[in-house]
Picture 1 (tube, rainbow, N blue to C red):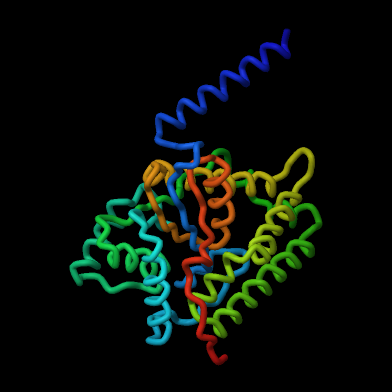
Picture 2: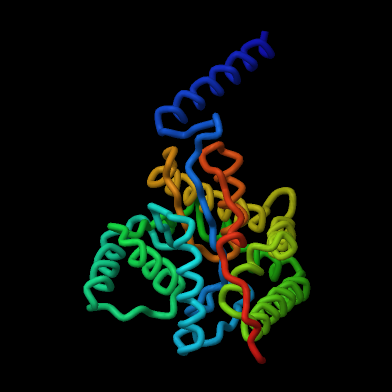
Length: 285
């Protein structure tokens, strides 16, 4: 009887999910919204990651020409939405920034949301740039996610330090690649499947930074997935209807999750960003 009840609930759940999807304009028939995800290291060097890539000044004249070439190629995707890594709770602030930029009252910072997001939206004369990030409070206590503290308290500080050095070495390699690449080629690299696999693997290491009773590493990775699911949900809300075409610009760590959720959900047809990013010329470094 329990098996029958369980199967019935599962079938009911699927039916409800499909009904909700149709109500939201999500299509499983192939007539889906189109999504192009541009993943990148953060142009403005905020220094908030475990390993931080040092990005060469993108405001330099030669880099500005390369960014303009990227924007022109992305415009060929003909998006009717441009979405960026900006908290949905602060959409009004983003609206003002975009309006000021279009009116000549705002000078773009190095941040990729400015350099790529605002530029692209203005190039296409779009009415707004969509904020789709989630920066709200996570459930539980901060200590529930403190895998670094757990490692140090359990005699594994050396292991954590080695992990951190490896992460920084990878970030330094990304920085070196940027110095030798055009902006377009650098962004193409972040969309390469080999890079994506290399970038995802450390999350599974962090997920083992705990034990069977207390695993803050797995908690942290789970919350990372939860944040990306919320970003996907925000994208689906603003741009998930058949006929929508969206370029979303986010940190490279988010990009593979957003692509996977967008495709596997049936909400979006996800295109390869490399098809819309310029290649070359190679820079001297």
